[in-house]
Length: 179
Image 1 (cartoon, rainbow, N blue to C red):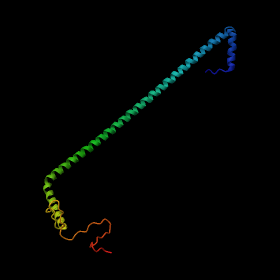
Image 2 (image 1 turned 45 degrees about the vertical axis):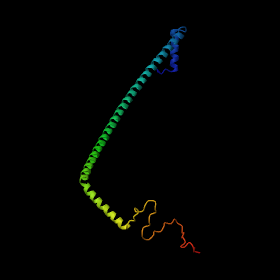
Image 3 (image 1 turned 120 degrees about the vertical axis):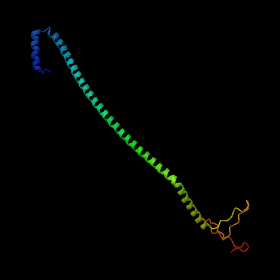
Image 4 (image 1 turned 60 degrees about the vertical axis):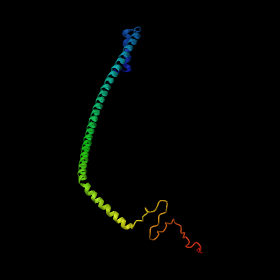
């Protein structure tokens, strides 16, 4: 603190002994020690208070910086949300107008098209039925057979029965089996 060396302390001690005398010197030294201790504690308290105030100012500055950055971030997020909302609203509006236009075109074409569409569909169906009749030939009449009786086979060549992978040929004559 004061840069006092050992030799200087010895000189101060000898002068104090000569001035105060050997009886009062221990009492004065004790009082001086207490006063110096109080002075050192007071100086350290002042230093710690100054350091605390400096740290408090630093924390306040950091808090203000954090608050301003949070406000800036919040405003940027709000502006982005507003932009997204406006673009979504614009998309919804254009989609709804497109749907309305499509409904209009469908209702206007549906009013004129049913007659034409029905006629063309009926003509196409008639053509397909005619082609199917030409390929199928005459239909057997199964409706004339009374219920419970087996239906008569249609005239013409008999269709071969489907085979399930077996090469079984029934004998032509049951009395004369093939050998």
